[in-house]
Length: 471
Image (cartoon, rainbow, N blue to C red; front, side, top):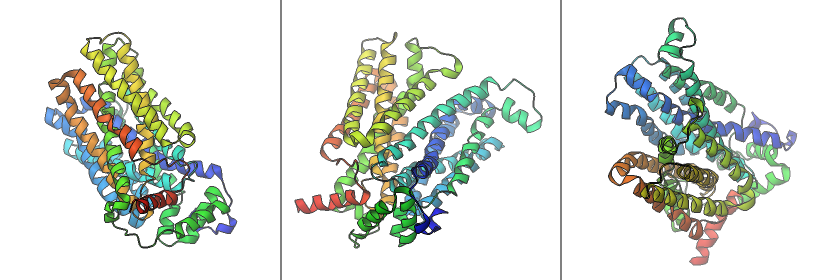
């Protein structure tokens, strides 16, 4: 592996940088695929196991419990044992979950393997963007971390396509034995099991990438870190990175209590609020209810290209806006433009429902406008920011806290949206999403520093100098 090679024999390779970041971003692909694939299996599993409404809800939401547990331990494990080994653990969990769900003989066993998949999602949702953030040179970091969000959106779309394809071809041919059960009689097994293929690719690929250079520096393995840094960005840049790391104060606490000190208070608020608000804006509710709304608007396509896929494709396309602009324009401009556009879109959607304008193109236009605004701002920029703002010594634990905040927001929106739609109506539901989205504009303006082009050590130094200036 690269972190054991003599740095003298290494040369800078841009292709290597992109390749490693793409491998790490596969964690996002599996996150998106596993989250979305469930949509095509719910009715099938309900029929095969004769599920009650409570059991059906548990089948859909049980992975969330696994996510929360996975996030809770992933930060501590990644700080202690390294980012790479924890990513390998996530890949193994994905493989086991996909195969276990495909072969499960009872509903209880199916739930157990769904929980295991949730653990993998929780781990990957934290460690993949963390690894990319620490691995990438500062001038490319925004783009590289955005690859994670891009892979996530692609995973969602491919899950929709694979579900549609397997469902449409379930009765095409007679197969022998268990293959008949998996691909025809109980096609949901094939839908869930298909995730084992990209998970296995992720697992094998991880053995060919290095450990995070900053984690190696934290563990005193400077020569190994230097080898990685030279391969990424050349000898001169590697020397500067190592010198910046050495120049840091060496008396920082490595426990999470460091984050609660006044010097990092703003970083803490950003890390907790920005991920939470990215979910409280209602993105998952809009994606979930989007197809139904688009059908009301008269938007119809064939089974493979329904409303879900359309929304998913818009999500993918506009994530490219962030990839190509985040390191040129900066994090704050994208957040201002995207969050502002999302708030306006949500307000207009609510107004359209209030006025009874639920047919024609307008609902479609503003649903897709909201998705596109989220896709180039909240979606990718949130992951970039939380991977940058925390001090080196506790970045893993701190990012776990941020990711946990995101999953709490995800859970609350999922639980409360049906209640709001029934009790408040569609108009006020979307207006409340707009209200919940709005504080992100204030956070971006007052709390968030522009981190474009800054090294992680420079950002950590910024918090300390800012606090000294106020003291």
